View: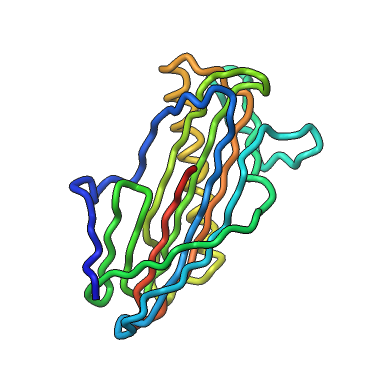
Length: 202
C-alpha cells in the first residue's frame, strides 16, 4: 500500500485564511470514505459537492452568530444545494486505532472511530468584491461505543466554535460579515477499516 503523505503541520486542527476572489464564488467538496486495511485497491470515497453562493432571503437560518458584545448577529446558513461531482480514490497505512490529521483539511484513521470534516465560509453582501473568509476543520471523535447522535452533537459544537473563530478573525481583518455558510460530513470507520475525510475547495 502507498503510505499517506502528511505535512509537518499534522497536529493542526483549524486553518483560517482569506482568498480574494474578485466577486467569484467557491466550490467546496466534503469527502469521506473507508476501506478494509487489507484491500489493495484503495477506497472509493463519497463526495458532497457544493457551489457556495450568497444566501437568498427565503433560505432557512440555522442559527445566528453574535458579532460583538451588543445584540448584533450574523445569520448562519447551510452550504446550499448539493451538485453532482466525481471523487478520486485515496488510501493510507495506519495501525489499529491510529489517526492522523493533515493541515486541518484531511484526516485518516484506522477504526473503530468517527471521522469528520467541516467548513465555515464568511462573506460580505452580494455584489461586493470583499474576500471570503474560510475556517476548516478535520478530526476524529469517539469509538465504537459512540452513536451517531453523539457524533452529530460533537460536530455541531465544532461548527459553533468555527463560526465564533471566523467572527473574531473577520474583526481583525476588517471584513464585513453579512452571512456565514457552514457544512460538515462524517463517517464511522469500522474495525479493520481505514477511513479518510477531507475538504477541498475550487
